[in-house]
Amino acid sequence: MVALARPRRSQLPSDELSAFANDVLEGLRFMPRRIPAKYFYDDAGSALFEKITEQPEYYPTRCEMEILREHAGEIAKLMPEGAALVEFGSGSNKKVRILLAASPKLAAYVPVDINGQMLEEEAAELRADFPQLKILPVAADICYPFDLPREAREAPVRVGLFPGSTIGNFEPHEAASFLRNAAKILGPNSRLIIGVDLIKPAEVLNSAYNDAAGVTAEFNMNLLTRINRELGANFRPECFEHHAFYNRERNRVEMHLASLKRQKVKVAGETVDFRAGETIHTENSYKYSIDSLRALARGVGWVPDGMWTDAQGYFSVQAFTFTEERLRAAE
Ligand code: AVJ
Image (cartoon, rainbow, N blue to C red; front, side, top):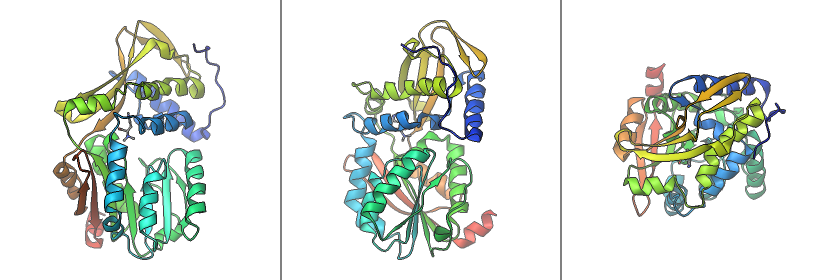
């Protein structure tokens, strides 16, 4: 049961709050309705995502951890002495810990995340365990350009880390502009290590996004609770249903929230009319082949420089380098 929401103070600073309000209103006016997946990650959503990674059906995190553990030594070779490691969309620190432990000569670690609170908590834990390392968190939306801290800019090499198949949340053309942008942020002679989920049988994908315990459904639904709280809306989550399925033609898992009946919802002063069965598209999770990610990266100047998979071949970690000549050519 959800009380009719009265606008309560948001966790977000006012410019980010209005970006959230604008994106939600614009997405709800669009047909078919949609809301950007990055808004899943308030504190409750970040915690629910961590819980998803523990579900038996959700293989990506376990597979990526296996790859990092198995090949930490080789991956660490991509990070020379004095390098700065920049993690895009850092979230939990459990993956980067494996790489930090294998790269004692790293000068700085820059976690970048949209959830500022989680960022600080995870950074504090790492400072306790890696006292020699400079840990310089940046609270930013990785969809937009941001500045690196001076220590990272002045390091001889910057290595980007983009794990978790977060790149799969972007449309392919957005993924290409992210990769172009990452090259600009990291600067000349940089490297990028990307974790990406691979195309696989639909049954495996469908169960990964429809776990039996219902945690993914709860994660999807939390978006409505967040909108109620932060934007003064009156969504009734019990009147919506979690839909997730693999779209084979487009190599992506889609998540939607389907209205169980005809209903009106007020969002930031606007009324949204839902037909019975009408959906809000809340996430795409694109799956790649090793070659399709390589082609996308190569297209914006990143040269393939290493690739690892788990024993099942479900997930991949791929490395790329960006040379100074290519950076100049791209300007
Ligand atoms: C964090 C974006 C990689 O797409 O698998 C998990 C988010 N959504 N279950 C993914 C998610 C539903 C996850 N990423």
